[in-house]
Length: 134
Image (cartoon, rainbow, N blue to C red):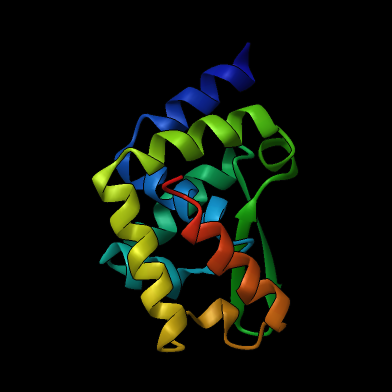
């Protein structure tokens, strides 16, 4: 029961929910990307990501000086949960606004985690974002 409790505690904060929304849309992002889209200081972004990581909601990989965050396999492989969250975010004005900002960042090449990404990953993110409200 502890994992379920930790999951719901993690989802009880709007900022963490917004981060999860972005990681449902994009396979990975870095702290600077969350800062840009969520308009939050680095310390708060890092604190929330640390919280999510400690509860196995997100995982991180270091590439050079950058830390990339993604949904943990436990969450990403739970298609029912991801689908439910995705449909909830699609009905949320804030969730859709965050996705719009992510797309703008892709358009102006300011999403650091995806600057060097293969084109098929960027296309996946765009398609995923564009179908969010459907």
